[in-house]
Image (cartoon, rainbow, N blue to C red; front, side):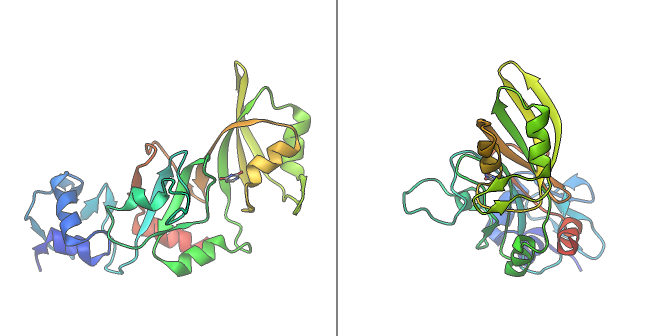
Length: 236
Ligand code: URA
């Protein structure tokens, strides 16, 4: 049965009807690969409806976003000091979203946001140890000894870190960039691991969580996860 697109979108919890209209007007909704027009109807049983390229999910009311957190935003719903918070960046979505895990004020990159408490709990549980990959920029060079120490484990005040992976090491000018993949999620872990070796972190960006990549999403922007991505996350 054909139903107005704004109603179909609102039913999935992706956006309110009014916000769904905005999405359609902004050209972010497509039906069978063609950009939808305001007032259009579609049959969810037959037509392929996408928002920002991701197929419209089942009407669960659950929302799953991948946000590129900019530097200077607090990973919280509110901040007593009045600094910008990540929930401000997803205000266009009419659901009470909270972040899964946290990134420091000065860390940027991939942050998942949802209103699905069960999935958030699952992903944050230390037992599940989802891999998180960071792009780290340090002053100077990363020598072989420090690279091995990062990988083997470093004694921090809350115990030795679990084995990690270092890759994509590139030195240019006065800085070195590298990827660090960890499974734990201790507070300020990457910065503390580097500090323990005397390495000065000048930039930190999370570029991957499990199978999810930040891709080329600009800072401050988000995308909805597809239902396939949500299913995979639940199986991690
Ligand atoms: N490690 C850090 O040091 N900071 C983050 O925000 C995330 C991981």
